Image 1: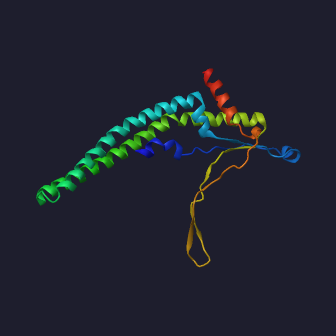
Image 2: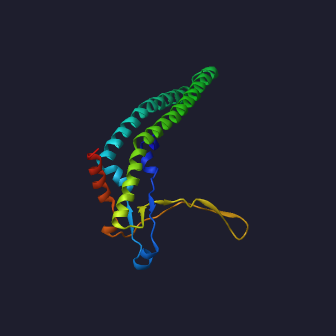
Amino acid sequence: MKKLLIILMTCLFIFTIALPVTAAETKNTSAKIAFIDVNKVLQESKTGIEALKTFNAFAMTKKDPLMAKAKEINDLQTELDQKSTAISDAAKSKLQDKILELKIEAQKMQNSAQNEVMEKQEQLIEPIFKELRVLIETIAKEKGYSAVFQINEILPLHQHRPTPDGNSVIIPDVRVLMLYIADDANITKLVIQRYNDMKKTK
């Protein structure tokens, strides 16, 4: 269930907006780029805070039944371990079958809960991401940025690369860490402010 509660942290929403640059602009000026932490916008904007609050409350409703089922399995397993030398083979087999049945039920419950949580995430969070993408593009055009990149994004490099001996090596995904970003290149706070203002007028 832990991964249900941190699903938003493991699924990074990556923004990379490239805007058209004319030949004159390329000749006379250097391309300007900006960076944004979209997860921070989600966590600190008023709309994002409310969405995350609703999402986490929903996720918690899926946790309790799973915890109860896990306790039921653990209790039966403890009973089996304690009585294994004192009960008949038939009784032992009955307990083992019951534990297996509960484990299958628990797996089905977990799969169902995970699907419901993902649907709730799409319902609550995806609309915010869509609004942010439009807002970020608007700000980028206003400020003259040629591209906006997500801070600390993960590059999907996980792939097989051939080696000279005819085998292959797996190249893992790489997290790109920004060692330095000038204040005027980080538009995270600006986007939070503009997004809050935008939602006030609606």
